[in-house]
Every structure is written in structure tokens, then in C-alpha cells.
Length: 321
Ligand code: UT7
Image (cartoon, rainbow, N blue to C red; front, top):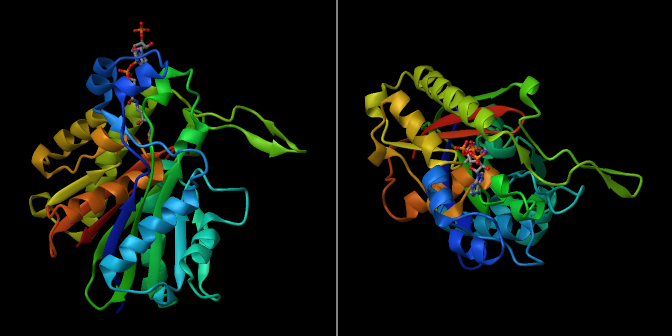
């Protein structure tokens, strides 16, 4: 029986942190007090012109490969979870393959599940490895969300940031990913969306994030709690044996509400939303890499990753690191 485990993590954020006060100085009608109290966000990183999702994805992936002690040539599948691909096609994953020099013949594709994208991609990669079709998979979440922010809409523009996180998932006889689940509810497609489409040489619809914040908030707390129980039950792991919870980094109040519902102490919740904002598909792997590199997450510990976002989509992956 073949399983998958994470062999290395990496991440990348562009430029210097941009504080809430910096946004006020740039003309956003908000305050540090409102943003930090309502969301826990103090800073985010924003790409300067020219930096692309694929460049950040490739840098995060290089760091994950280094951490795993593997080379680009060892990779046989690249999955990039993103809502902000460099272009309509080719996929960001093919651009990453080219940037890293992963030999022709490997498979590469993008996965679109918005803020649940990384958890979905990790779940898919786990299934590829368990099936025996692939052995070493780069799973990346990367976003340039600042390209789809309306800077005159203070209800959304203060929330999001840019960045990338990556893991190398490898085949192993010992299970790393213990359980995983993915879900969607398309009836909720309008509460969080970018409705634009390319058509006949123009952009039709709104090219910016539009969100019903309170509807998203309530839905997120409910499904993140439910899916946590689902994967813990799947793995027959009692909650008391969970070492770390890494929820999607959207809002500290959502994370606190989920931790409280589950009964996970706050010092076991990895929080990076204060420094990264909501980086959508990049948020979970960014937080994972931060906590691995600062020594909090240690080999052998159990970690529950959770994603939730547009679609509506949600999912979780329970792993032994
Ligand atoms: O990946 C998933 C993505 N999204 C999320 O996870 C978001 C989930 N939702 C949330 O995090 C929260 O709903 C928000 C942070 C977006 C909003 O917090 P809220 O407590 O639900 O605030 P609200 O929408 O009820 O707005 C309260 C007030 C309003 O003013 P009035 O009508 O009470 O006078 C807003 O106009 O806050 C005002 N407001 C702001 N004020 C200063 C909204 N945005 C801002 C802002 N700065 N940036």
C-alpha cells in the first residue's frame, strides 16, 4: 500500500510588508483600528508591476525542493492552485515547469477552487500518489490577488494579499496524509466572486472581487467546523491528539470561532493572517511553511489544514508531518 507525505515546504512573499496605515496613506477610506479589530490583518505583501503568479509559485517551489533535498528533475507532476493565473492559458503549472526546468514528460495543470485551492490540490495529489501513477508532486498555492482588487471598495481591498506556498509530496510506505475531504455548494456561487470573462477581445463583467462578507463569514465557520470533524473521524484520530490547526487565513475571528467550536486551544492554531492578509490559495501553504521553518511544527506531529472560499468550496487534509 502506497501513501503520500510532505517531504519539504517553501514559500515566497513579494516586497516589503504594506501596513493598514500604508493603505490609508495610499487613499483607502479605512483605519488600522477597523481592519485589525475586524480581521486581525496588520500587513500584507503586494506585488509590484511585473511580478507574476508563476514567478512567485516557482520561487516557493524552489524552496520546497531544497527543503526536501530533491531536484526539479525528480518531479513528475505539478499542480498549481490559483485564481489569478498569469494568463488564460497555458496553465500556471506549465509556466512553473518551464521556470524550474522540470523535464518534458511530467504532467502539469492548474486547479481552481479559490481559497480552498491548496487543500483541494493536496487531496488530488495524494490520490495520484496512492494510485501509483505519480511519485513526486509539487503542490503549489499562488496568487496575485492585488490584480483583482478594487482599491475604491474598502470592504474587500483591505483583506487580501499576494504570495505563494508550496510543498513537495512524495510516495512513502508510511502515511503522511492521513485523511482528506473536498466539498462544494454551487448554490452559493454569488456570495464571493469575480464575474468577469474574456469575450470577443474585451472584458465582460466585473474584473474585481465582490463579496457578501457576513454570508461568507457564517458559511465558513460552519463548514470548517464540520469538515474538521469529518477528517478526524476518517482517520480515527481523537481531537486531543491533534497538534496543530491551520485554517484558511481569511479572518482571525473566523479562525477563533472555528477553534472554539472544535475545542482546539488558541496556541495550537497557526496564524499568519496578521502579516499576510488573505492570500487565497496561498494562505494555507504559506502558514504551514512559516510554522515548519520557525520550528513549531515538528516531524511526527499531526496537522489539520483547512480551506474555504468561493464556489462555495471547502475541504480539509489531516497529516502527520
Ligand atoms: O477567503 C474567504 C474570503 N472572505 C472572508 O473570509 C471574509 C469573511 N467576512 C469577513 O471577514 C467580515 O464580514 C468582514 C471583515 C469582511 C466585514 O466585517 P463585518 O464585521 O461583517 O463588517 P460589516 O460588513 O458589517 O461592516 C460594518 C461597518 C459598515 O459601516 P456601517 O454600515 O455600519 O456604517 C461598513 O461600511 O464597517 C464599514 N466598513 C469599513 N470601515 C472601515 C467596511 N469595510 C471597512 C473598512 N474600513 N475597510
